[in-house]
Length: 285
Ligand code: PDD
Image (tube, protein in one colour):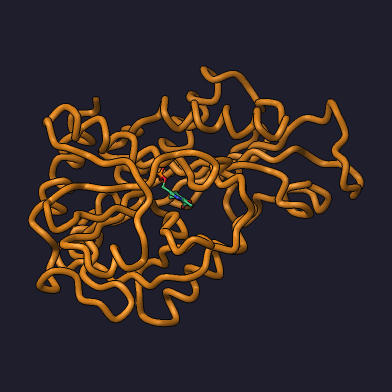
């Protein structure tokens, strides 16, 4: 089955799916995006992702490209036309096309692009069984990280640094020496008392949809959580470390920089939380 992209009202073969050279997304990174997990052909946490998309658009004064109902219909059609059972759908909304000028014109129609791709649950499962390696890098991003902007250059550099050193992810460190989040994931630790810790939302991190779902599940299961920032030292000496995202779910971390976490294998609590999150995805609520 050949891949199909949705571009401003048309379903097109990937190779001929284009946007205009003066799309402001292309020239100014003037746009936002979402990545939504698909499991068994079902969108996970669709409402949470759409709430966040609308919030990101609002913060940047970009008009919604269409109402929520029709947008959901297009998402389903993209999944159907690409025959996706397990994978992701990518949505991108940019301010639209206009002659290049920094201030933005009012009343131009936003551009909407969607693509979808398969992901192998088996490959991810293997990663989860082994655990992944993380490095730390300085957080060089702007201060509105709550907006899911397509302006991802610092994240790209952080992920490349991870890749170059054979790691899966880079956790970013703010000027106070505290972890903000991964280049495309949220960061969590479990301290020596078994307490689960993750940074509170605000402008300094993206309010991850997986993070929010896991927090709801922790509450349901009566598992204690501490919402606070944690330092690089706490990360290095944590009993367990894991990360969350729509493409990684809950993924145990076994090494950070030169520090082996626990016994170098995925921790018991992280594995349990991965199971809890997967049950949530399968149950669909
Ligand atoms: N990234 N933090 C950042 C900086 C992210 O880019 C992401 C998501 C997350 C996790 O958010 P969520 O649980 O809603 O996926 C945290 C997506 C997957 C990406 O850019 O591909």
